[in-house]
Length: 374
Ligand SMILES: [Zn+2]
Image (cartoon, rainbow, N blue to C red; front, side, top):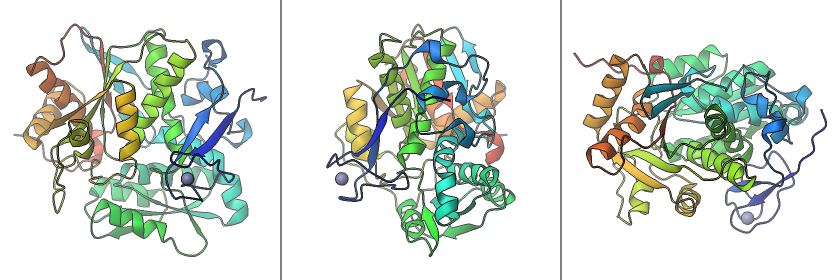
């Protein structure tokens, strides 16, 4: 298909353009890369008969239709929970988490070149992105070596192995897992999902879908669980693109939701000092980035778009997890963090029930080994 649009990949710090699609960080200064979109979103170009994230393929100029690696991700249900509160069920993606939106764009964009050059990739993850990259690599017939923290949940570990990909458990913090993966063995190419701009860029479709499912009207608030920041940055990028293109008139207020243990963004936004625990023991095991490499970028984007951050403790997460499940929504505790944050803000009267709100439920409950409250 003819792609009409253009894009560029630039460093977020020195603004140098990147020349290889395999670069995961700036080749000059090492800072994260960002993808600039030099085209407008147009609702008329949405492929209405494609019921996946690829209904927006016209806005992904770096993926050729013949190279698309898909498992049917995206176009997940937006369900009304109560009057003005809606859940976006991204836990229903093919591998059970929103990460599939990023994996489909990243693997689609690079799989031919990877095969030509080396044939295998390396990735690090707390579990969900690893499972997702493993699945899309399997679909593309690539080999992917996945590095995970020792604390990875059993179901996530088994899921990655089931896709036929080798998994390495690494002792230490989330940053140490990333370091280990970046020192990938000879012949493997590191495509860390946190860094690679094509992964983050795939998350744009989540914002497009929320807007389209509301008939191109913006909800007033969107609550997201935030750890490494790919979900937050991708969703902001999507909504900004819609506003810049004139498709919607206002940005929603984005609330980045964190656990008390892992809340570097919350603390930075509130100008408080954050001290990471020696070991993260939260039941929200997908939210483990105590020192996220994209923190500066997250702060900048959240402030520029008038967003906010919220923090919840373990008891609030457990209550939210239980309450959601008792109403039929079985999600992993990390997803319940966003619902817990919304409930907290309702209690504190920082948000009203009259505000049209979306909570993104990011990961499936079958990924957890958490015992239900009796
Ligand atoms: Zn740079």
